[in-house]
Length: 342
Image (spheres, rainbow, N blue to C red):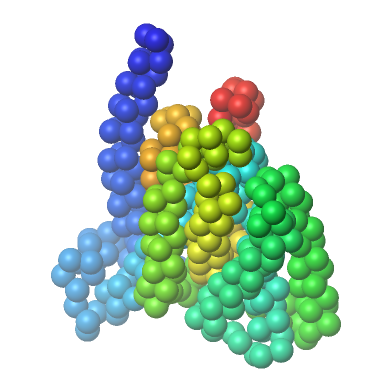
């Protein structure tokens, strides 16, 4: 009993300290990200562009209309992916689950490949809407193929997602192989995960969808706690597994679909952030969901910033940088602790 009370106190303290610390790190990271780019702009100029904007100053225009939206979008996308990952791991009771298991990434990829190849869509806004539609269709198909209406079977849902991902990936390759070289060249920039060229329109569009998904996921926090106990225990506690799965699946599609459409496939963040959150505050989803979102947001901002600092020319896609930074750290955690503890 003493150990349980001590653990509860420790997790409460971690929440009280962790949330303000992560918010502070996120604010600093977003400002630092706005200071970095191909053109060197002094920190003081970036500060003035934020708080004393001069529309006649070209540096202020660059910071205000390109760098700030990009930094904000990386935080928004990261928060969405982190919350989506926590929901997926609770639903499937699988510590290796991530939003891509619902076929979201593969659905967005095939929709964008078709859009570029057959309709000549090359704008960021066009990619966003294509990606969102493709992710929504793929996620819905996985739910239908997984037979959620006949019962909540995590293994069946994961297998349906894996099978549909294989089919959609093959379809994407088929479209790209039979398209002109410039189609593949445009597609690969999205495929590696990139936030370049995103403006406030992308922030507003992705932010609105992710906000709806976050509110829906937070409203299911208690239900996710019971879902992790299994279908029978969840039902005995008064929950409706089919309803929980349906609403949680909709939240994941909104969160991961909007994030993937805005930034491309980000495959690691949604896996690692929930583990780190549970390591700090336990399995209570009222705490795990916001902390997972904040951890993922900070990771995305750091990855996007470093992706522009490290190379002498050009930049490294945020999807690649997130995996390069987070992968070794995640392996370190797994080696130090049993997976069940994560």
